[in-house]
Amino acid sequence: MPSKLNDHDFFKDDEETSCCDNPKMSEEDGFYVCLNCGFAFSRILDDSPRRAFTQEEIQKRKSNERVYSPIGPRTIIRGSRDARGTLLSPKYKSKFNRLAKIHRSLTTSYERNLWIALPNLQRLQKRLGIPDAVAEDALRIYTQAVKKKLTMGRSIDTLLAASIFCALRVHGIPRTVEEITKVAQIPKKKVTKSYRLILMEILPNLNLKVQHFTADRYVDKFYDELKLSMKCRNISVKIIEKANQQGFNSAGKDPKGIAAAAIYIGSKLCNENRTQKEISSLARVTEVTLRMRVKDLMKYVDMIE
Image 1 (tube, one colour):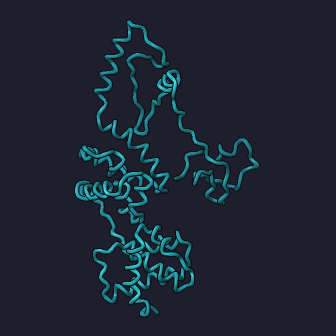
Image 2 (spheres, helix red, strand yellow):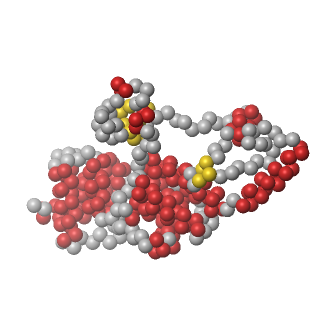
Image 3 (tube, one colour):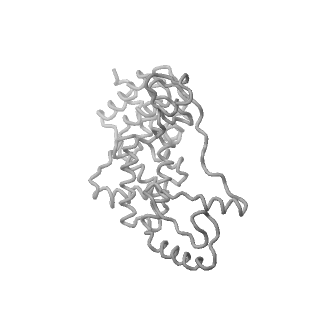
């Protein structure tokens, strides 16, 4: 995710540390990295607030609450303390208690929901390495789901993860649902159930269509992560193409399993051996499924040129 850091301000204290004529800084894997020359600078230190334990620390954190939220400025009215965090006199305490009660009643559930969801979306975007365009569409999908009150009975994180997965499918980015659930720490069953609900209720109103990925799309994803050669990738794709031309029935079969089997066979043919455990864990399929798909595709290996 590109950093909002001013690139010129990054080097204003020490011009000799400038890596190139036109540095473009970004936050990548915990480091400040120049996108133009690839030079890695210092680590990104965690600036999250310290946990509060004592009563004094709790009061200090309350007085330093952020006034601006990701969806715009908001006013915070507390019943017992003023803007500086000091206790109010009994004369004004009852009046501010009533103002705080009115303020809470005027804040809609839609605003409260987004105050929680937007920081979580930014966190998932950074950890998954999602482009800004995909994150924007995920936010559009999620806000429509909130307006239709699909969050009733469902957690915010579950619906948010399903919106991200749906936006990835719309943009044609082959990311597995297991990757998202692992980062979001949500059961896969809940995310897929919310994803199907979004497909029926939200996408038709937004004029968005998801792309269904075939096995050859997953080959491009897996071979790069396994650091295989382009020759191995081409052989794997040819195996899948020949199998489809010869009437291989892929209905009901996970395309990730077919892609994993084709890569396994291609790595054997190119002497770039990868273990079944390594490939199956990357593709999020079992080794039994991988062996079954390998057995199905081995019939078509002699047909490739």
